Length: 353
Image (cartoon, rainbow, N blue to C red; front, side, top):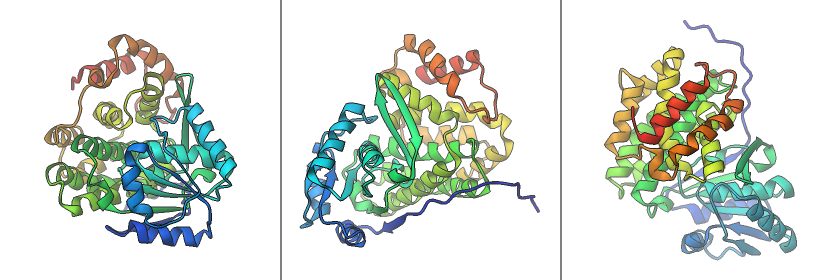
């Protein structure tokens, strides 16, 4: 029998509605539950038709469709002003992580509740974490005002997501649960959620990549992504997320692809110093070696492998190291030196194991 350590776990209060093909019905129920009459819809212009199909005949007060990665502060301010000027009493976000992130930025200053309808596996909809980018620096924080009141999961809405984005988005969810196993507030409850999330996502990833018409794989991906996000919200940001937030905010790298590329390098770095976590990751993947198991899984779906392929210049690495070092969690199982971090980033840049 294993001893249960002393821990402090916080469970966030949220309604989750799950059902393929039921987004419109569930959204209407969520809006009624909040007694909202003038909702503001946040959805990218490219998702306009998808948003229309979800909204059905629901009356909305106003729409905001200028959605950009990493939530630039000027975009957040525009959306905040529109929410106030329109008298909105609810935010409905329909889209991926950038869309949810923008709705959170509005909720942070207005206090408006959010009903999130995710169309990727980003997981932002299940956390109270917000982030905005200003002057090429991404600032993140936690605030219960940004936690969506209700999440509407409908796997049918992910059918139009291109294969490469589906792969990267699921890998982003994998990063949430793996990083949560050694994050600053990691505990037995978040660890249990993380391990189940790894198992579900490892099953979902090849299903979604190779059998895109099968809805079961997409449902598994949403299930795993939700668990991963809940674990992440409790455990906090570990080394992996600190690296990716700097790379995304400073160098404007694509969010999900960056997480996909960096994850195996952080796992290889930390696993020798976190044997219990490494063993649980390996078991969830169904392999003996978690690092090789993850690399094999990513290779099987042709996931991106090099930061140079998504926009990072090798000359940017020294600056990235200097920006990351001050925010590395003290609790990281492997002490992080400047030279080791530089080597990790060089390997991720080139795609070397």
